[in-house]
Image 1: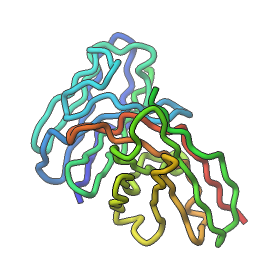
Image 2: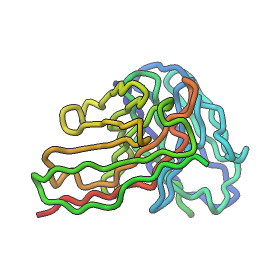
Image 3: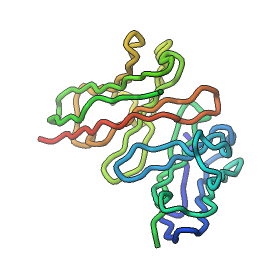
Image 4: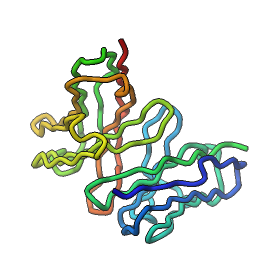
Length: 108
Length: 120
């Protein structure tokens, strides 16, 4: 089973700043099977990125996914008020899928 | 419009059985994997398992193998998650989600969640 470790646990930033979220896999994996989700309080998660770098339908271009091997990054180029939420990475390349533990992006 | 609509909140006692549902609409239900995801209070997302309704091919996460049963009824476009004997530690929000078409797709549509509370 691939374990995903996200860092930092919490990111305190102001609107307009850049957010950089990390997701590290316990073993090398295909970037084709790495997704990012956003979850706001009281809501179901929402798919942001798939295949590490492809934006899901309707996701603005301030969300940028990069990475390969064991290291993946979600960058939010300029935080909007609606971007403050919890973000999860997920791998789905093997038969056993896993999520990271999440990174909370909070208003500083 | 693609929708996944889950059954309502449940309050159960330890040892009771439970089956919750997830009805898909607006797409060919048989052709997309459905995943179940647990979120315990104040915690992160945990993948429980998947089912492909077209042939009922099912995979379980290691922590959930033997603890729950995932099934689907393609005739009514509905997936299920069931327990034979609930524990207090099963208290959580449970989400179903559809994996998009194509090998690289993530979980593109999610149900609204079913809150399960297990308490004596």
